[in-house]
Length: 90
Image 1 (cartoon, rainbow, N blue to C red):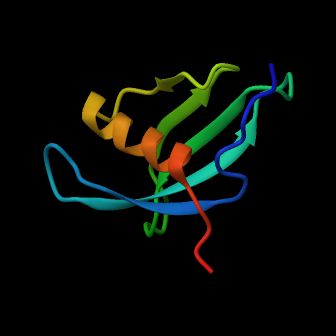
Image 2: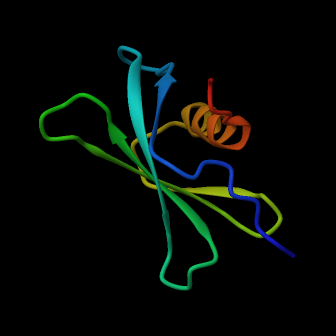
């Protein structure tokens, strides 16, 4: 089964934080060493030294998993939905 690539270039997404102020994330698409599993690294967007917030990985069926310990489950879902539903604005 082919993996759908949802986001193929860097993007910024608004994250409504459960605790603390809302912020904008920088989502950087990448591929793991096998070249098949979409991997999206998450960083703070506008910091001089961006904080790494973990990554979201997708499998062949479109299921995702968060690898990190910074985002709550609700925040993880927001980021995953952004990646899945991403469309380029013209």
